[in-house]
Length: 115
Image 1 (cartoon, rainbow, N blue to C red):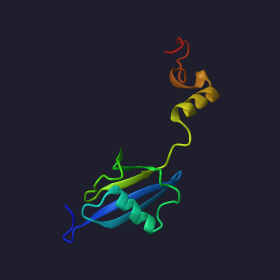
Image 2 (image 1 turned 60 degrees about the horizontal axis):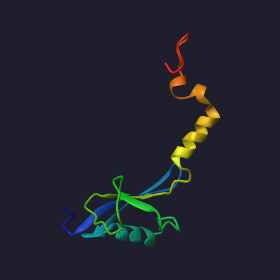
Image 3 (image 1 turned 45 degrees about the vertical axis):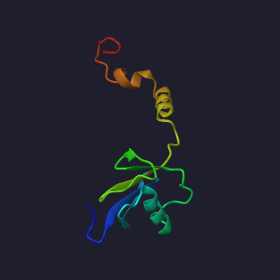
């Protein structure tokens, strides 16, 4: 699984701001957990300050901090959403109006509404 010396190669990915991604590869001891990877990043000052309550995952699946890592895992630190996607969609729909979205965007000339 790991290298000959018992170390795991782990990648940590953090989205610090919109369209800004930080990615670091590090060596951790065999049997390391997600919390160990985050502590190693904090020691190297890679994580933004105050991100202790952020959700974390491995390859896109949310996991607990005590989950053990395997060779080649990608630990991802997720930012909280600032706006609920459902609310954002409703607001966007209200701004655009019913005629320019969804089924009504490309209506055939002389066609019925919704077709």
